[in-house]
Length: 322
Image 1 (cartoon, rainbow, N blue to C red):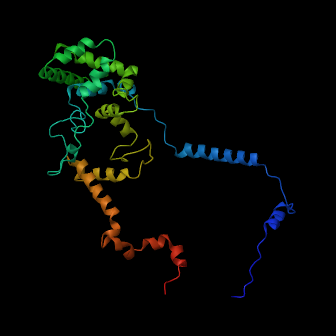
Image 2: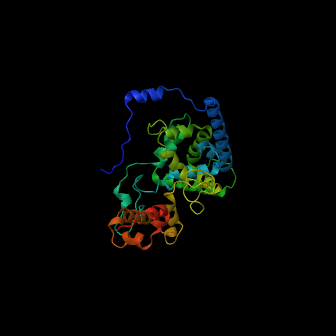
Image 3: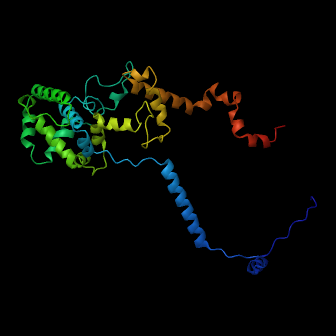
């Protein structure tokens, strides 16, 4: 016994009497509705003010309609490359196609080929011929293209691509015998894009009801229009890296690690930069995950006790072990 008197506990009846006893202290009126209204107005004004000063611009969505209207020659050039199988997507390799020697390798390591062609994309069929078949009109040109030999198709594409590159205006080259059905195909696709129908045709290509945007993104990425928009908003790799929003607002924090290596030699000019950077980030992630088990590295906090500076209040109050 330490001699301390135990405080008597109240019985249930005594507690009930205490609770039911009327309040004899000071009171004041309190308008809950007024308080909530004032709080909502203050928060709303603060939110609108901060959004006006620090908010990102609400840029309109990039569509094929805006592309074909604002940069018709670039759209036609990209569509011609898709039709001829010379675009970046057409020559990417797995997981889109079986393009020979397209994969990035590091010695015998070829991770890109391990997945195989899991998302097959025939750019001529997916981006040009398929959408055109949903519209009335270009059937003769499509039939002529389908019945031509690969050599004839290549000659038509080469001649029309040179004409597109030589013409610096906004109008597309006029039809000529050397171009075959290519001017009709590209012209009809351009009109389809300007009408807005191409966006819907690509979005519903695989029956996903517009949820799968892979085809549209690949097509957009092959042209210069989308890249120019990114450069205008300072969103390219040598400006800000990968972003979640437009303007000067950085995106997801984990993306800067990948973007950083692409700006440094020798990765900036390496043909297998994607593979090398993924391996480096994978190795660094593995080291971070196994840090508590790696001798030497796990004792760095003891050598450089920055954590004691962060949690200085805790270490100031901690009783030394004795």
